[in-house]
Image (cartoon, rainbow, N blue to C red; front, top):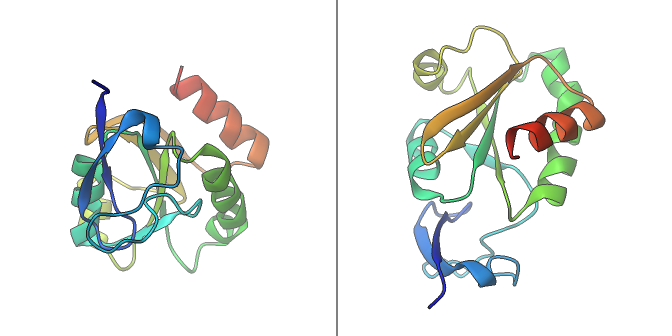
Length: 145
């Protein structure tokens, strides 16, 4: 019997149980029938943040950002490109700190952009400041070893 993974749908935030070997086979959500992996960062809010952190057996990388932040805007396409490359091994998500100030305070966000890598809802690594594509890839490889 294969190991099952719990994957939270990026569209409806329902947690799905998925055989591990099917994670790369374009799985769909059992509730909304949309793809569980889109190759794009998931836009989170106060409510969906907790669901994604608790409901995913794969690591979740959250970009804490704000619309007025120049380095955040510069890093956004790099983050999106990395999401396309790393899924389904890693879920990429974005949280607007202006729209979700309680979450930003809960995680001690003092500067943006800040990336936090979570495993099973627990913070395992943090990186503050914008990264280029090579720097982000190198940082992720170091964290996921």
